[in-house]
Image 1 (cartoon, helix red, strand yellow):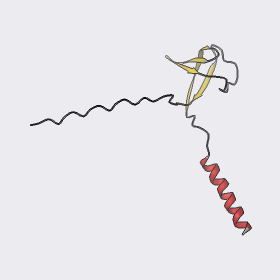
Image 2 (cartoon, helix red, strand yellow):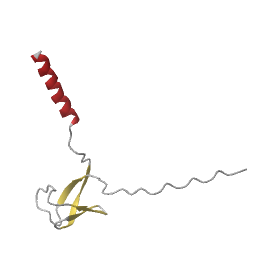
Image 3 (cartoon, helix red, strand yellow):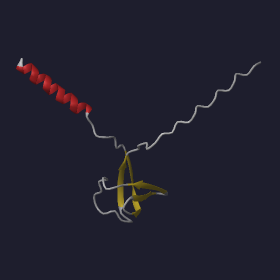
Amino acid sequence: MKRVLIVVGLLLVVVAFAFARAPKSDYQWTGTVLEADGDHLIVQKGEEKWEFAYDKDTKVTGELKAGTKVTVKYLMKATSIEVKEAPAKAAPKKK
C-alpha cells in the first residue's frame, strides 16, 4: 500500500510540472536603443521604431543607453476591453 501511495504521489508531481509553465513571452524585438529613460525605451530596427514602457519590476541586464543593441521580450496584455453594441442586421430585401 505504501508503494502505491508513493507512485501516485510521484505521478502527481510529474503531472503538476507538465502543466505548470511560465507566462508566454513569445514576442521579442531586437534593435538599437534611440532613447531610454526611467520608464520607457525607444528601439529602432530598420525604419521601424517601437516604444516600450517598463518599470522597476522589469529585469534589465546591462546599462540602457542610446546606441546599444538590445533584445526586448514582451507580452501582449489587454489593459481594458470595451464592448460596443453589435451592429443591427439589415432587413431582408423584398422582391
